[in-house]
Length: 145
Image 1 (cartoon, rainbow, N blue to C red):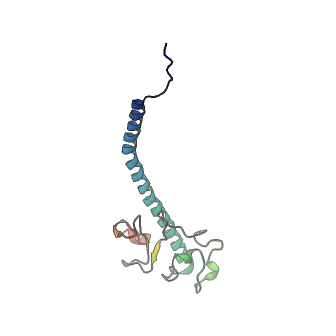
Image 2 (cartoon, one colour):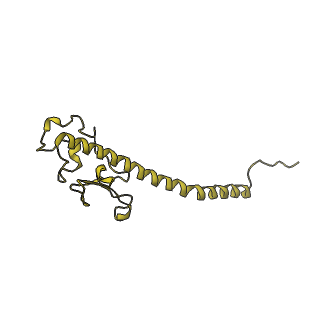
Image 3 (cartoon, one colour):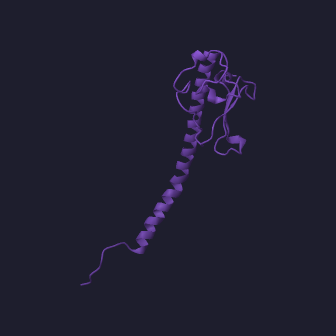
């Protein structure tokens, strides 16, 4: 009687590796595509929150922050506010720090907007060198036009 040790043959291991490779080739791109979509959705949600904060700033101060003040005016009261007593304490209109976009870069703020709106928020997207993947958002009141 032969004493055989139990184990896997080389062929069995290769078949399992082949199956794992095929599954990852099919599933991998789909997961990456979903991740890219989720980054875009996260940026749009953050932009909506910035619009909300800008609207509150305007309601309290009678104007949007100047481009020179930037979005930092939403968390720290800039000098020369018309009604400094109206500025919310403890984090301003955002309640904390300015968010970075999902790709780790700050949002751009233009006031007045480059397309004629009162202001414009821009995320440079995944590739800051390619303008076609930028997320550009005028104020909500301009979105219905």
